[in-house]
Structure formats: C-alpha cells, structure tokens
Length: 135
Image 1 (tube, helix red, strand yellow):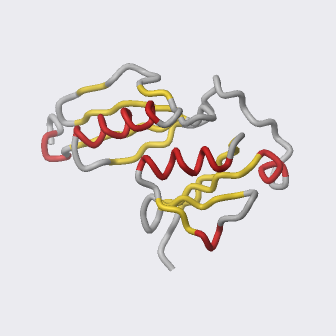
Image 2 (cartoon, one colour):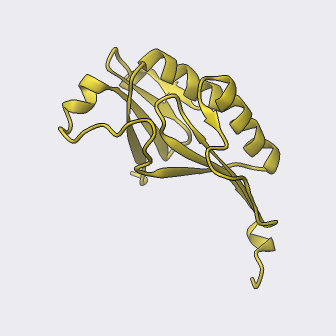
C-alpha cells in the first residue's frame, strides 16, 4: 500500500465545510462520509477528514483551537501562479478568508495563505525547482 496522509480537522458546520472544500477542488469520498464526518480527497495520497466537534471529541479530549489560532499550516502545491490566485479567490467567495498572511513571491516560488470557515490555515503555492537560486 502506498503512503497516505489523512488530515483530521474539527468543523462547526459539516455541510458548509464540505461545500467549501469541494469548491477548492477536493472530491468527496462517500465511503468515509456520514452525518459526523466527511472524507475530502485532494489526491491519491492526501485526504482531509472533516469531523463534527462531537466526532472530533471521540478521538481526543484536547480542546479545539479557536478560529483565530493556528496550530498548523498545511501546504498544497498547485501547477501555476494562476491556480494559487484562483484557490484564494475561491476560498474568499466560499466563506473562508484569503491572504491571512502577506503574499510571498520569491520568483521561483509563489504562495498565498487562506483559512477555511473554521480558521484552519492552508498555503496554496507554486514552485519551479529549476529556478531556485544556486541550484
């Protein structure tokens, strides 16, 4: 079996979060989706599990961070700068927040940070490894 990552995120409104991630390009896997959780697929190896607060608490009693906190920043690579901009624009239009940090343009790498409706932070980035200085 190939290596995979399942990112588990507590969400306040499961249907709204599913719609948000679908708008960003994630696909729902109905085999791992019910009234308490939804599996949203980015790629064959990257899945995001959206968990209602009650479902989250069945895994851990640690507190759910407030939407103003950042526990992690999850980065997704995209094919070009336009896709980075598009993901941020879509996030803002779907109830998230675009550009929660300053846009970073290093020439060989371009990124913008967004937050989903629950405040989970994502970095959409494009990079051209052949243009890295000193490579």
